[in-house]
Image 1 (cartoon, rainbow over the protein chains, first blue to last red):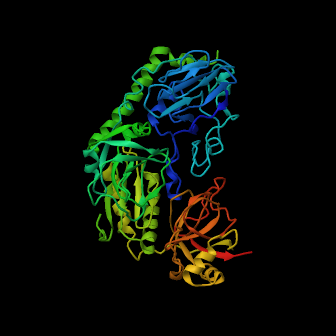
Image 2 (tube, helix red, strand yellow):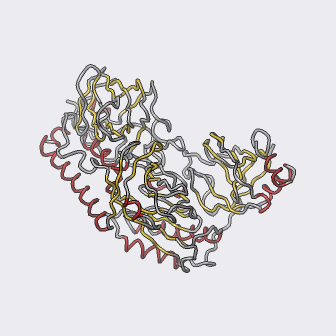
Image 3 (cartoon, rainbow over the protein chains, first blue to last red):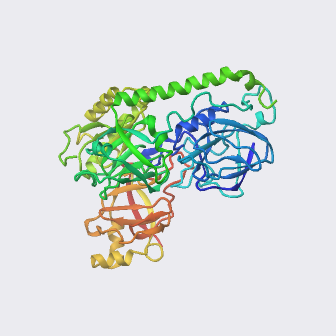
Length: 333
Length: 227
């Protein structure tokens, strides 16, 4: 399976489940900013939920399929379509014939930021520090450590199945299918649940509405709004920080850390977005209004358990509805 | 956050639902960073027995411990971190001190465009700045900011210099700089506001190596002038 890049799009990178275990050397976790949609795009093809995919941002790429294949699409609707042909809706897989051009112009009504395109078996790039994700800050991983550009050739890892080797270990599902639940269930609304602390000020964040500022990328998002009461913003002795941490620098404009965040930070962390809502964080685009809701640790864990259960149930329903195993055996045939 | 120390074994606080932060104190102190490294090492040693425990991230005077909240209870993490902190008391930490890592540096000229400015700020000749900088042995306090970027403690007081008023859009990889009480080497080309006094060809960051960072927490470092 090969896709040739005609236009790279705004920031199209290869991302997977990331490399969380290298923060002690200053390496950001990387990985898909919206891990929920990463999983759906992959599971639609029978891939591992954390396999390497294309992450596109606001304006996606234009790609020509060098071979016929099936692609899994999830996350924001960036107006995806086959040039001269049908629409490519997220939350389902799509059969693409060799020679067809697909494009994601970002002209849809969706106010979310990122879409995920999976290929059978995941994308074929070298594993660096345990992950195929692109680390833009340090220029390694993914496709030469950079966003996709015109002329790049992106290959899938599952050529055997595509070339029709029934029953081969890597055989995947090649039929089109629709995610059997609401693919946007956990990522549809820009309400972020947070746990206040460890520094004081988290409650003040909850009290007022915020808007995502212009500085919003894979590293983090600046928020406009407030103002926050005195005594919250400031500087602290640098310490390790996490994805979802909300820092308040001296200028009082909160920074919410995303997948490519620096591993240590010197601003007070007044609250942290719960793990179950990191996918929503990854879908915020500049200009979008955001509200925070404070929850307990128990509620945060409950939301995560619920999210995992929904994923498992949907995968079971997907297999049931289409005779998954049978199809897996005859993939490519 | 108060400025008081947090007791002998520090203070443990939840950071969201998937990490805890052990804070030893709210100050920069090389002894505390060594203790944070020792505690992080003890926590990492327990990972084999504790599925779901993430890799610890030591800093100036703290250790961040990420974990998978569906695989391990926060109470288990907190107890383990407390035990590791208790075992590595102040003064009880004597890490091995292997020979310093030597980093060859071309000082001044195009490699160190701010050397003359730094010398002027301190009323010294550029050669005296080089002598001071290369005469000290530094210790890696922790890594952060960028992959492979080591915060080095031990800058001679006579070299403490404010950052440049205007940061550069692109600092070449290998640049050796000073900012306040810190000195360090840019592992990658990136924007930066440090005063650049030299440059090294030593590969600070190379993902082809088993351990991609040349400098690790606790390492001692010496800069060696070369032409």
